[in-house]
Image (cartoon, rainbow, N blue to C red; front, side, top):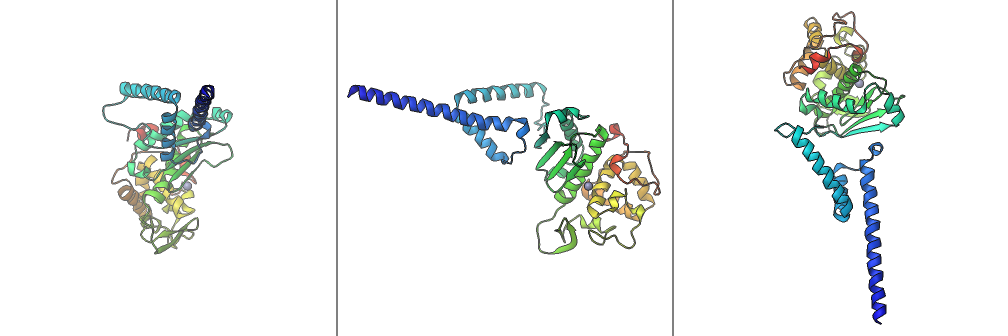
Length: 314
Ligand SMILES: [Zn+2]
């Protein structure tokens, strides 16, 4: 009988060891999948991811030790290099780098540099502009467009773009985020007659004051609108591109925009809308020197040269 109890106790001990080992394996797997650089497209919300890490540290002493070590290392680096005030190095932005490692190697600017550039650009612009930014994806995919932007996401192509082009395209996409995110009103019933990809723009949307400078609705220009009322040909394709092109032009070619606005009422209204309603009065001094006359309008303002140092000194 005694032997039976002994064997029974041994079996329980063995079973509990096996269970702990399995749970360690299970939690370790979850933990690893979170830190894998290529699985960054996972759609687990930030909060639940954190919760899973806590669960893993609670259950597995090995992982807990590893994570404490990592945290200690991180905080000691922060202590030595961080300024006195608390600064969130990533501005709270979630970056997602997606794509094949071989294609990433072909990029003119490395993923790490791209991230630094974006943080640097955003730190030069009002923080309100990025409040709705939920996901920033950089795709290393040769076949996609240079960028996309909507109310809460920006997606950039990570390859075949030099530094200036990457910056200009990012600022253009940020213009879409500002237009559809920062300048969006509460949801309401009253519609404006403008539609963005089939979704109604509500009557209290602050951007309507901008759109209506040149547009009757999202497809038709006002009869009085002229080619010279836009900072670029692409800006004249719809009111949303008009906004994003004007936003980018304001940031990177401020001097040129002011010069053009002196002789054009529509451009003057667009400039003042962006200055006062979007930038709270702040202005930029960029010059492209490529064109300053109404006749030499580029099709795509993101392809214009600009002064990097002027922008970063702003
Ligand atoms: Zn656009």
